[in-house]
Length: 284
Image 1: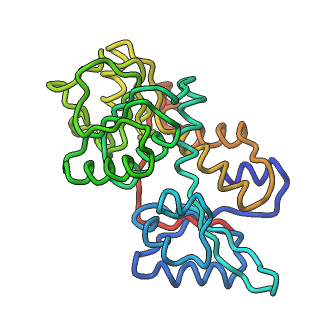
Image 2 (image 1 turned 90 degrees about the vertical axis):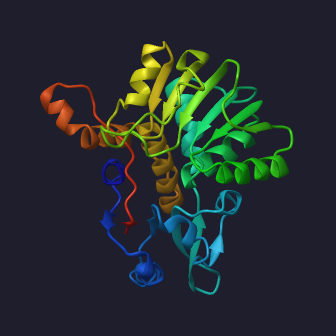
């Protein structure tokens, strides 16, 4: 999607992917800075570690305590500094607005998963003034930690650990369950039914329709996968690096073509889910 955006705007840039082991992350960041890269994207497990490696942090990185985007920029004295940003949180909200036409303020949300993606989603949802937020995680202690953080930072939001008893607006899957065909549902239907929700969102985008989304559709929920989140966090990173408005339509078209190319050839439904590899995706 980034290379399509560069082409659309006639920019002499190229986006490249590199696999970087965690122990070499600091060297990789310094190497990219020395080679005059405009910036980097980082995926797990690098996001939390990179937070400590940047020369400067944008408020977005400080707010979500993670870095997924780095920009290299010269200061007043001509020294190149690495500035860490987080574009994941904005990507989640933009996708919910665009793909589900959902306004979050005042809604009731069930969030499945309290890992890195789940924590960012939970805090962002709270910052959007959801009325009630229910957190469910395999390890309850992690969910409790996030709930306590939300109570401290966003006291107007009612946050609970566990499944809701009544109807809600949105179920959001922030777990990796659904990446593999044999994965169980991230939702325990003995405790909560899809029929109790109006919308269902899965951060996974390959396959495009996970068992979670299939079950939600059966229950008449309006559904969307994580492709829009990937698109919008990428578009924001593009704008940070280039200072130009991202050509989102061209980026979406390229993204869908690449991710769903096998299904497009066969005429099947678009596949898709978000796979997180220990790579630093690097933009030069």
